[in-house]
Length: 245
Image (cartoon, rainbow, N blue to C red):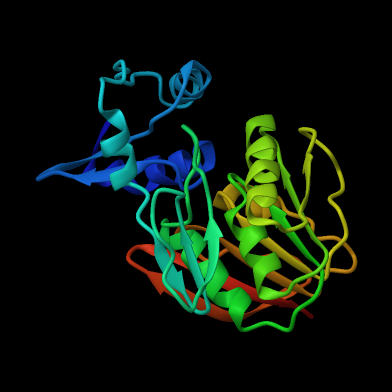
């Protein structure tokens, strides 16, 4: 899908919501091409959101193109990457199989959230909008306990459970029903989702620290009852650390 320059921010925010970490941004002279490797269900989500999208069958050798979009990253004490890469010695590996619709942790918003988690006192944690489970699994490797993850997409919940098992960590991944009024209790909540959902987010009563991302640097979400304590930025993306007032 080719998006003109003035619409890139809106379109990429929507893509992040539809395919957490699992899409590519290919720069062009006057526009940006947004690409997702997905199945027919994913294509239908794209059509429902954007209307006019180009869908092409995946050719032989597609794995090489897919692999280019999932390079490993090093964040503090963690190495995060796909199973076909070799972890860096001395770093704790977080190995994520992205499947067709999710990412391995290379997106800046994921990186920023995990960087903020490195700075916090370890406690119980909830990952809202888990995708492939990168943040939840990274949190467990950093010593957060217990760790739970929720998502509206059943495929994301299954991917989180599968990746947690492959990494040998305990993550309680559950499907959140659309319109559910409450989310599980945790002292630290991470929401790497779209700005609109963050603005409606109601952290549980026990939550004292909230980490949010999934939006651009010019956007500054506000969460009732919480004050912004820190902000990180990379490229055009940002992440915020909130503490309960």
